[in-house]
Length: 423
Image (tube, rainbow, N blue to C red; front, side, top):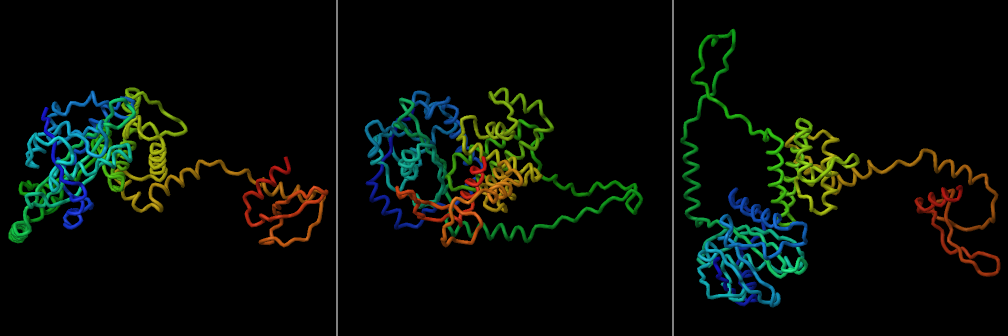
């Protein structure tokens, strides 16, 4: 285990330096597939250690034996408080990138312009949100190089209740300087201009001029990208996108839409492999739900222990997509164009499931009340001129009522009370 905590200058000084150099940005960055996968794999590892607990046990974490992302990680210990947590582990790759040795033991010693400081700066968000936090940005490193990075911080506990450890994983990519990048761009553009253009292949007609002539020189066009054929492959792809969405910044709507899109693609393939889907549900301990058929599929993709409210919302989105015959691969665009996005779709689905009012109920109540004897006639101005109104009165204790307010403009309580009055 690389027991090498990092150093951080005074946190206030670091924040002032960050404000002075405009190199930091929260915009989404195209760091690449490998980095995104490391981000997701780290989150999946955290999920695998949950075991139906609020937070994984710190006893189950051994970063020194995680060959995949252990060298890119750091473990913070808050046992002595949150002001200046101890660094219990620092991976070799992260230590080398930041140019530090094993002599620093606390966050306050981490160099202010190091990559490690970008990761440790976010630890208070974990304490506040009590959930993993993902982030990505760009900054100028201590060596003066533009660096893109993506990281994730995940809470751990020694008693299954208190967050007293945080495990962070970060990956990065150093960018070339502007002059070098401009030269590369120019070379690529020149290469594209001078590259010979392939001749289009002439179609071979069965009874035309090319009949009987082998088209050996025809250009073989690549087949369009297609979705995975098997149900299990689609589930794996959907789970990867779901993990990325859960691990990313909560503002990343595109990551969530992508995850829901792949979940929809998975659902589209269920009919063709009902037996395989049933086996997946059985293995996960889930059952089909007649009233909410999409809920088990959402739990398969996002996790059995995922937030119940979100599961319900996502199931409503998938049900809405199926009701509207959204094609495979088309849910992302459908969500982008939907009025109100996910919230609007959920609202529409709930409206569909809401039981309709019995026809003529209010009309029957109004007809019956018109036939009833009048208890008193009170000259009073009311809003809107509606036929039926609700009056709020106070008993004066002398056999009379003092009218205080009229609710004629609000039809909902008026209709409810009319229905009660005829029971």
